[in-house]
Image (cartoon, rainbow, N blue to C red):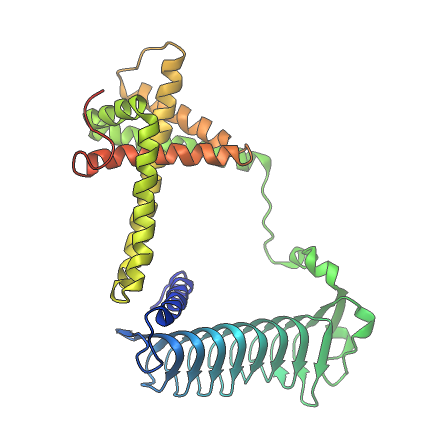
Length: 387
């Protein structure tokens, strides 16, 4: 089963593959293709899917055509997208022109300048300049300049448009809410929905988010909840540092002394290591085969950032303590307090516009560069000699 968080990532990967195809002079016949389990990836100038049916699709290119039935979901990106065969699962499509000539068995999330959709069995989320709908089996949320409804919508419908056209077979079984610049210019025939189920509001009401008050559980955060969350984050950061100190006290001492002795070089080393981690992920994607390693590199980068921030916060707390002429505590509790002090000051730094973000970034790079000095072979980055 695919994770909902992986779908946008895989779609982005497919788009990057499409951009790399012209660079290497690949034609439509030589477009990069990759099959993993039940997933089919393809990219190029002209991409056409002709089967087999039992696959999830990830296609990207200038012209993308689905000419055979899709047994799973379809993730499509391109300038002109044509879905000429049925899609059993969900449809995710983004392009200048998106056209479906066959039914979609699941939900559809589509964006484009020109959008024309055949029947959708599930829910629909669409955005574009001109959006034409056949029928929708669930609810419909559409934002466009011109919306044309030719069939029935089985659920509720929210239409954000200045020009709405209803065909002879247009129906909305649920509540119909319309947001338009000039509500007086919008007329909804009784055959589409009775007046008791129609609400027409100004576009400003939608832009201001007044519709969010009708959500089942609006999110409301008090000042104390924000402060409490901030303090919990400080304590958690301190506990992480305390656990590492308890497990490897000598190593943490070496990290701390090296960072305090050469902060500028540590930050520069952290910048180089972070750039290498992030850049290597995108370079691997250019090899096509390395696409599967991209999530691994991004995970390593995220772990490095978290570890660097934790170490940087601890070093900041130690530096502040020593700057006031205090003696470095020997016990674990005192070092835990210093880690919390550093995390507290780093958290407050986020409140300062621009400069605060740069300060926390430097703090994180300081930690990454220090850790890299001990993780990489001696002499590659920051020197590991005891200050």
